Length: 254
Image 1 (tube, rainbow, N blue to C red):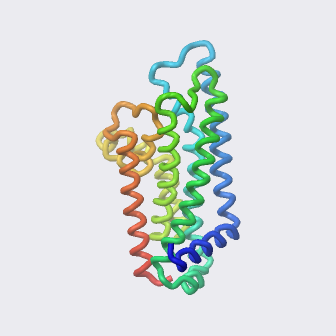
Image 2 (spheres, one colour):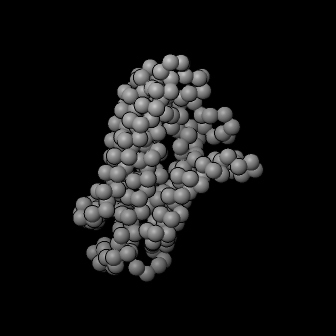
Image 3 (cartoon, rainbow, N blue to C red):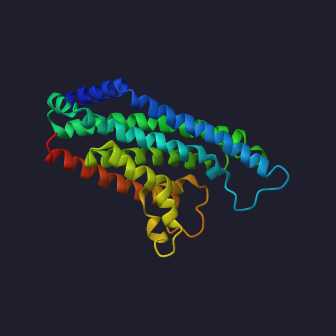
């Protein structure tokens, strides 16, 4: 990296550390993931204590139940790390300190993406292992077929979803509007849409639905995408969101 970009990344790390809501949102991601992982494992163990699980039961997907909820914290982080500067007005001083907007944008994405990657890695691995440890006889181990690729895919999925959120946040510049659109879309609306005849197939290409297929060891019937092709669709959504954010940042005043 150039000296300007190195300095800008360090600047972004300093801003993230001083923004109170950032560590809280990242901590919420891990805490929600772990709490729901324990709950999921306990429910599975109780449900199948006296009978074998049906063939359709996927212990890998069940192990990611905690991460699915913890992603709320990561989405909130992606929004706040961008929009907090717009709401407080400090975006003007930030752009004065780093006047090259391409460098400023790249540094913010690198710092935010690195933080999201580290937290996603911690939340994914710990919540998955905790869910398996409390799941009883239906659990799987890291050496079982398909587990390690699913874990790697889950970390990429969470990181890409956060970067997508950051791109949209730069485009909209409002924490309330961005979260008001993305949180319901990712955690309620998209799931409902996939179950509606006529639009369900198209809804499978929404960023969270497509990327989320990597959380399954075997993709459920009825999906037109596979695990890694779905992750590629999410990567395309992310690239488009980041490009839109970059163009908006270059063309608009602070």
